[in-house]
Amino acid sequence: MGGSGSKTKGYWPFAGSGSDDGDPTKEGVHEQSLARLRSFRNGTPFVFTRWSSLYFDEDGDLAHEFYEETVVMKNGRRRAKLKKIQKNLIPQGTIKRDHPCINVDFPVVLCEV
View 1 (cartoon, one colour):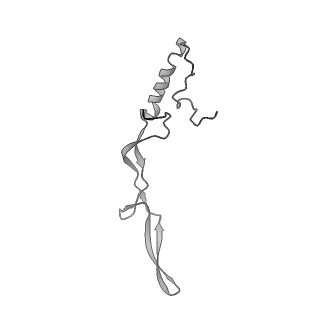
View 2 (cartoon, helix red, strand yellow; view 1 turned 90 degrees about the horizontal axis):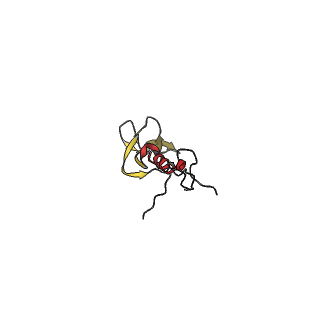
View 3 (cartoon, helix red, strand yellow; view 1 turned 180 degrees about the vertical axis):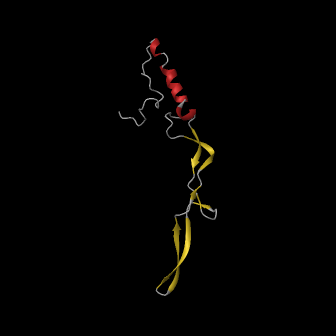
């Protein structure tokens, strides 16, 4: 039946034959699988940084979105509208997480025993 994991060689840690018939040529299959697991993306399943969704504006203020208040004359009445600013914004960049998270691409099921 269809699995949802990555079948690409080198990413799936349990790529062995599945049969354990004691053949000495297949002795290192499990060790190779574990070695591949340990070398997965620098050897750790944790993510310590993330890309921030915040931006700096020209004044150095930090926020998700910036708006500018504009005055519009409509039917002889003055009306204030908010106009979204999308130019001259600098992304905050990469920030460190408070607590490490598990990478979603890590190919092992983790459970509490």
